[in-house]
Image (tube, rainbow over all chains, first blue to last red; front, top):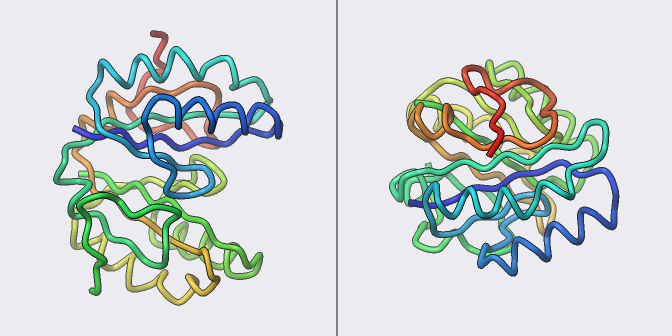
Length: 93
Length: 93
């Protein structure tokens, strides 16, 4: 299983602390507000517990999807993410 | 199945055109750079074909994940997304 973590955090400090925390939890940054990593619902709940404190702004949110490896391996990617989705070939459709 | 579309687009005009296009394709905006919607790989490829033209900047990217409904229904959500993930109860862990 894999985690896909996406977020909207308005406060610059909280957003940077959240990103550092996600890196510390072993996730990989693929876009400014999107991280991915290995793990199932147990890891997702750990991540959730750590990041809640940074979700303070009116329109702030974090969404953690737990997806099967296939969703990852068959993801369609255009352009150049900040890091490659490990195991995903560039897709030319 | 569901689509999760996340993007980093540097040019303001391209970013707005991409967002409008995703809305036009029936997707729902849940964060500034994240859309979701119903559909499988066929719909994902359609979306991919439409949005490639907006991925022009050096560090721009769009990633389209196709995930099972369960990944959606069991997503962990902190804060207030721009629209509710249809079918996902607010999760208190």
